[in-house]
Amino acid sequence: MNLKQMVGIEAASYVKQDMIVGLGTGSTAYYFIEELGRRVKEEHLQIQGVPTSIASREQASKLGIPIRTIDDVPYVDLVVDGADEISADFQGIKGGGAALLFEKIVASYAKEIIWIVDQSKMVDTLGKFPLPVEVVPYGAKQLFRLFSEKGYNPSFRLTADGQLLTTDCNHNIIDLHLTAIEHPHQLNEELNQLVGVVEHGLFLDMVKTVIVGQDNGPKTILVPPRKIK
Ligand code: 5RP
Image 1 (cartoon, rainbow, N blue to C red):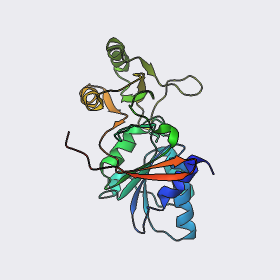
Image 2: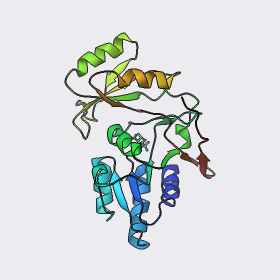
Image 3: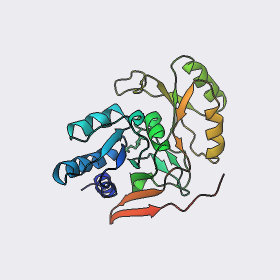
């Protein structure tokens, strides 16, 4: 069993009868959804799944997990999702799979968030992984210029065949190659204020539980309560 599968299966054990469950996106969340599907089929677990992407919706649907959108439910009991980087103080970068907008919306209405990662995603400081910024296509090149001027080393996200990537919401992604993000809250504020930026991949002060896949088994970390920023 690989580390992503290990944490996916472990996280699925947190799902209880009748929960409304946010279904993350990516190659780690994939294993979580597979295991949920198995539990629905074999253990008659009754849940409602709120997918964070078209890919996760299609996967869950095929597995027989009942699907709802975020607008169909009053809240989400638990969302389980992957992450691209988690810092020593449990802030995260997400959006490597281009699903950050729906992921952040679903996370915003969740009572509990679990991130599942393999050990390579745990870092001291965020920023080695490029920070995704989701932008509307109109004016995207202006934002790109602005990011260049600020020294943020932007690049437009492309598909495997070299086309400009469009998200599930028909936006584009500009990745910022920052190397180190020393002040994530400051950057969060700055990006939130830019017209044309729909969302970005800094997920701050959100996660309560992290399950890390290690060679000797899954390690569950309960994030200490945060101070008010
Ligand atoms: C998608 C995400 C993913 O959760 C993140 O990119 C991690 O993906 P993977 O589990 O494939 O490494 O944020 O937008």
